[in-house]
Image (cartoon, rainbow, N blue to C red; front, side, top):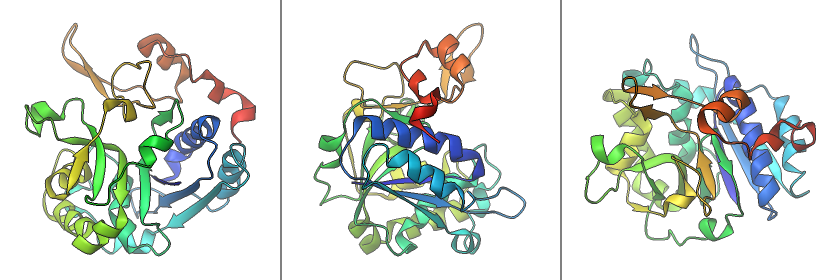
Length: 264
């Protein structure tokens, strides 16, 4: 299996939690690829010495697991998403749109946001046939109301994406998305560009549960959601904030991640 994360230095705890949760439930050998970049005036990339910590955590699941850190600062800074550098989303979210330019990225890879935690083995999901498409994912919880077709419900959340890099390279999908992110300001730049331009397929919600955990949930995604009372307002709770995860979400099943034996 091949899995990709993207992030700057602020994403390291999330990545460690993600890897630890995956290795608790999935024992097949996994190659983890972590894309990072330093952006002048914005953020710093993940330091090289952090790879050792990630590898210790990964190998607790399977000794063959491996973590590779890929610093793409030069590539990213040469083609910045200028129109979307000041959105509420860190520019590091858009690093995945450069994966087609990186030697060594395998032909099939699962992209995960750093706030997505695994609950079950996902071999059946990873083995999904995507030979005729570019990306596969789960519809966004709110997307159909604001971006997609309300009846088709085909606007995908980009936090969990199974990607066919062969088709992506052949079609130039990521290049087209990079141009769109550079030239057009969007609320959800990388997600919106992928939805507009990709040949895609939607998959069952259990592979990217953005609401309450269900019995069959494989990946729980800690996305921002909206509360109505006393007024409509967004609420963001991340899995590394155990107190708010307990009090606001009522989720306790990931408490094992705070025990030293599960991550370095």
